[in-house]
Length: 383
Image 1 (cartoon, rainbow, N blue to C red):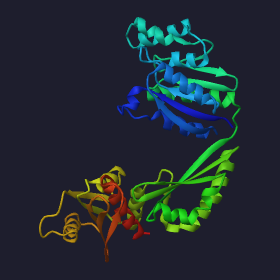
Image 2 (image 1 turned 30 degrees about the vertical axis):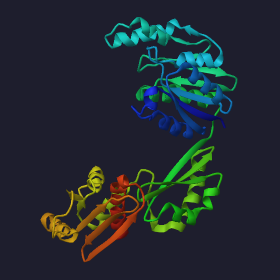
Image 3 (image 1 turned 120 degrees about the vertical axis):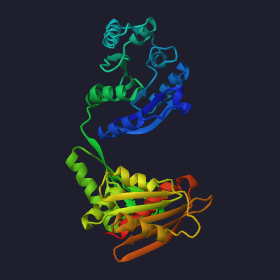
């Protein structure tokens, strides 16, 4: 099985002006091809530094994919950097220039002289036609190793990866297996406590099990390598059953399921409607529920603070009466350095439950944590 590394090129990424989404896209798809991605890196628009990192990376991996630096300007140095890394010159490819001219004509424009730079690629490289943009890509092979250089524009990069690069990798390295992942979502138990329960499974080699903590939630990723989709499912299924037996209702969903979606579905099954009252939270709970697009969620009222004499219980009761619904969920967020708190209140038919939870993370994360804590309180009282 080959390994790969991804190098994103662009000073604008290092300056924080744009966010690198290309690495995530490539890593997900390489995983599905059964290619191990061991490292990603970002480097600025400097020919020598790019060449150096390519040489270094080639000492430990078979596949390098670069994105960015293939434009027509002098600060687009990827072509020259790859050539320098392999000790060759760049050469003009007339067929690439014809493609660029044709693309520009399609846009109703005449190519400028500096755009000829894009028709130069390292001598001996395999050109990759870019049918959705003006920057040709290329592949430079050296023995069983290769450098694949793609444009940095995400949609162009994705198109070329899906239609040219991934088929090339699969054929060139004769890949037959796959890597498949399933993510179990949990709430109501911290990462450390979950690790106590399933730590033995995290030592497995295939499938592998890993944890990723979020604000009030923890994901458990099960990743299997197999020759077929069915075999991967079989490997994952056995581990998933063990995890579900150990954690029970702590698991609320898997893969694309969300906590708010699960909660709203449970309310719909009971024929109940929901209103929300948020204080000092920025409306994060209302935002999540609104984004789920369910008619079960009726209203979210957002207040910066409580006035003198007001209580969370009184205000939430008013919302229930105003909207004539069965379930109310209220919270008051209290961000603080060191230890933040959220006061929660749940009102359902025949029940009223309140509690205060503490949070030791950054105060700016309290809104997301408070929203997830409120949803988990509701979920645990519906199932």
